[in-house]
Image (cartoon, rainbow over all chains, first blue to last red; front, side, top):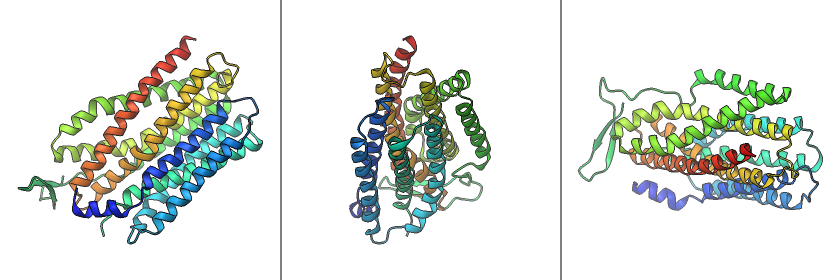
Length: 135
Length: 206
């Protein structure tokens, strides 16, 4: 590892770790809801998990915005295409939900979870690429 | 291919490619593969829309088999081989393998999960009344863990190593670090796939 990379590692916030934790919370919310089908269960745990995941996403972006000299151009160059790809994947999953007549609160929670998923994964990809950008 | 020299201190340095020894040019996302992905996703949409057992079973089984085999092969066969290759050979192999993985893995995973969920809904196996419901929930957890590892570590490393290799002077230490991350996470998901084998065979056996 070069001295430049070591310095970069010290400066950068733990975006990947936080991102993975955020994704894990969304997955947990999804498992909670799908494990109780077709019973009606309290949405509260799923909403708590989703809110925490969304907060971590916001926190990740906020801490990244404060990193001096971060390669934002490279970040957006990669993240926008990843966003397109993961929006298509999220759209496919949403289609499966709607096709199976999911509605009401569970549909709203799962849709918002898909939004967080479709944004956070591109953030992680863009971050991983941008951290090694030259200059 | 890039000319890689080992410095006296042991650190690898990628020099400008000499004449007649070019690093193979490649596309990070191979555009030729996009129509194939579109066709596969179209089949998935059709399968879900038609909602009959055979197409859903076909998509779920074929997708799941591909996902499992690729993970295991990459993690336990190709991974150790790549690790022992010389740096130039590793670079060349990576530029040929990884772009394909960018398209194959997300497609295979999406098809497997979406078709599987639709099939489970149709057959009633995702409902709490199903007598092996605990095993089904276990499969959700295994897939969830694999998804977090793949989305948080594997996929970003895959893209980042390709972007690094696209540079005129890629840094070997960065390529090395990202490739290690890719191979280790592929190995971890390969191990999780063994759990998937156990669960899926148990569900099939009834």
